[in-house]
Amino acid sequence: MDMEPTPTDTPTAANSRWFNGCAIAFLVVSALVALGAWALAEFEKGLDGYGQLEQSGPSGSVADPLPPGATARYEDGLKVTVSRPRAEPDGTYSLTVTYENDTDEELRPGGDSFEASVSANGSAPLVVRAGKSLDDYASGYSLSWLNRRESAAALMPPLGTEKKRTVPLRIKPSAKGIPVTVEVDPPDAGFRETAHFQLTLD
Image (cartoon, rainbow, N blue to C red; front, side, top):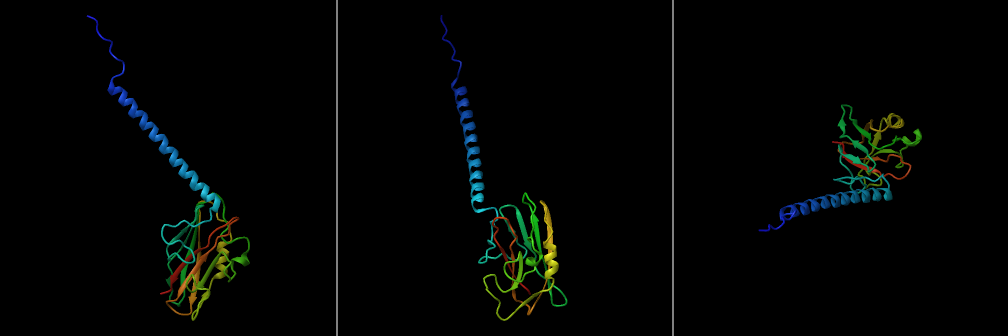
């Protein structure tokens, strides 16, 4: 009696190979999709520059300022944090602005000119003024930045990669409870958005 030849591939083995092939194809497609999404995000950053703010909460724009204690995060890795103000016995307030350089190059938070860093106008790398962020000027109250030159001196040295620098601020308001805006505009060869922080001196 002749026996029929046994097929080399059983249905179970064929199904197993088909499943493995689909799994590998799925992994390859998933990796390609993830790589494409990353490349698209990098392309978009390249188009608008790496000086854009990328926030999960308030944007840090003039219309949506950050609260004290928050951190402004730039796409290139720079982080800037403005502390909560601390009342001093003499009626002044102390706070700090901390720069954290997680970019891949050295930065100059104060720019190239000491005089520009201590400027009282809105074009300086660091501005502290009375009023809300959307106010063009404060009405009925004022603010004195007592250690402006010390703050500018702390801003001037280059800030290396993976380094931090804390800049002390000492201010005196004309009255308690006034709103204060801190504007941080780190100089950049291309473009960098200004980060706005708004706080109240209680």
